[in-house]
Amino acid sequence: MKTFETLFFDLGGTLLYFDGDWSEVNAKANNIVVEHLKNAGLEIEFEAFMIDFLSRLTQYYNERESELIEHTTTQILRTTLADWDYPEVPQDLLDSTIKAMYAVSQTHWYPEEDAHEMLRTFQEQGYRLAIISNAADDNDLQTLVDNANIRSFFELILSSAAVGIRKPNPRIFEIALEKMGVPNSRVAMVGDTLGADILGAQNADIYSIWITRRADNPSNRADANTIEADMEIATLEELQRRLLKF
Image (cartoon, rainbow, N blue to C red; front, side, top):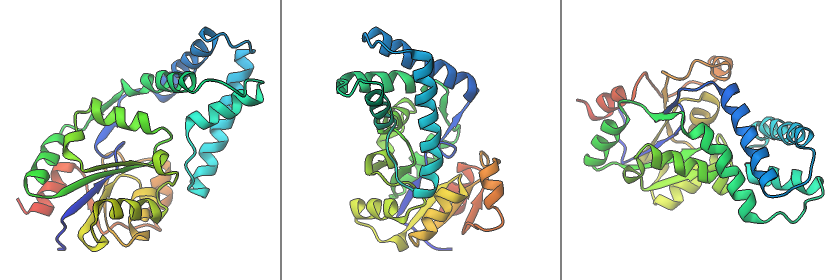
């Protein structure tokens, strides 16, 4: 078994889990967007605007999976408003609207029950820890980290929104390696998504660990025959046992 000095973690589905209904959460979040724009005095037909905005988001979500380029939700909102004759919307309005939108889903994310103990143990054993997460909004990611009370465990928290590159592009892993000053041979990546976390780690020549308790989804099932992790675990507690030999 290889030994490591640094562990990279995905966030959602790995350290945190979601307990809500996405269709209900998204509907509520969409209403929040409309409310903020109305309160700011924008005079547009909001139902048609939201159809347009959501269509652009859907198109973007599809494109980013193949291009591996991360634009942000704020950029999509800015572009949509510009095409609706509001090209000079203040940045603080864009920021507050997106912040309120993500606040809806943030209430449904919780740390896994074994996350704090596992992170604390690895930190006490001298491991250097980092998060590398695909996210369309960096502030949302940072808020989730703070809400889960796990920031103190990590030396680096890197989102695709912050660097403009998504997993499995190896460049986002290379940026993390450069920032932490560690060689890829001394790092393992832990994540729940085969096509992003595991393939991305392998693209960067990093040891890959697939955590499976939240991994039963169409994307992973489609990749199961073509992407194989170096290690497979069911829980974070198992990661602790296997790497630290407890």
